[in-house]
Image (cartoon, rainbow, N blue to C red; front, side, top):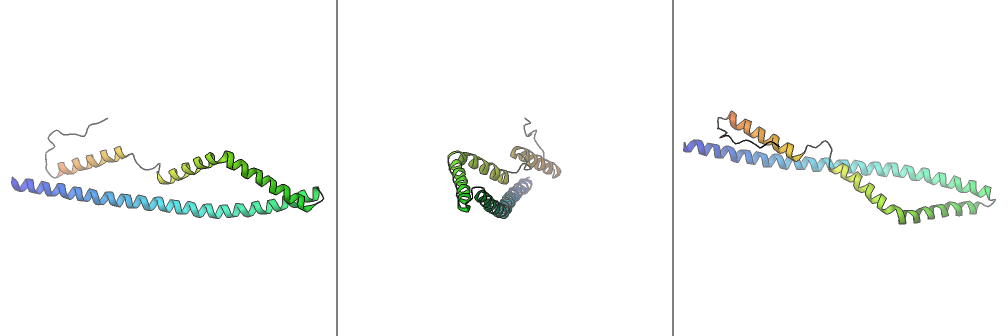
Length: 150
């Protein structure tokens, strides 16, 4: 009898150690996944952002020359394009800060918190069910203790 109790205590300790190591591995994997998603997003942002800036630069130069021929002085076209960007910058400082903050928080929360991750309660229920199944297979009695269903 004492040997069975000792054996069951060793099994419980082994299960706790297995659970701890699998939990650590899970969080390492989740951290790696989140880090890689963030790195890929940063590279995409830099690549597409630089392409967008080149397109914007050439469109701005073209618009400045076109406005310059329209007003018969090239410098007037460049001044008008510069003034347009100045008004846009002022507008973004006044109105766009909250919009940009919300957008950034939403995007990064989507990277960190995956929608395909299971609910922690569901994962805990699966762990308990697996433990009870293993316990019954090893010949230990359940003593009518069940995980409460909600």
